[in-house]
Length: 172
Image 1 (tube, rainbow, N blue to C red):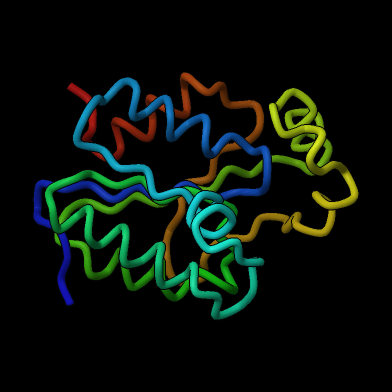
Image 2 (image 1 turned 135 degrees about the horizontal axis):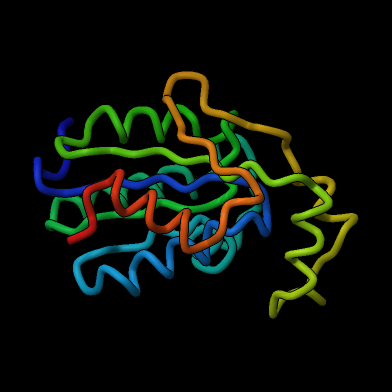
């Protein structure tokens, strides 16, 4: 079922915990302004549903429905989260294929040690640490059926945001 319009943009930002996905999404919206929805895996899975990240979890469908609803109502959409390829790949591939506008996929390839370092500076640093993060970490967990542009840990937030906005056509 086709979704959105030729004018809407779908951006998928994936990567390990503390790789910079949420920061990039927030900065893109700050620069773009109104009309851009952030569909955050953490919010829908952990806050709305209070669900663990499991194959076939209810959050997979909720992320899909939320993104489709926003696209159908004229919003540009950023779907962001760890979004393991094995759990979310089918949904993300179908969402991109069904979207009438430009769809752009990005993977933030950040080493485990760097994610731990970045996590230490976050508000929720005391909520979980190295041990939990090591259980979640997947090295270069790229989607098998979608081409993702890969950003490495040496890319600045400003450069990343600029590339995503230009690639998606969200800039002036």
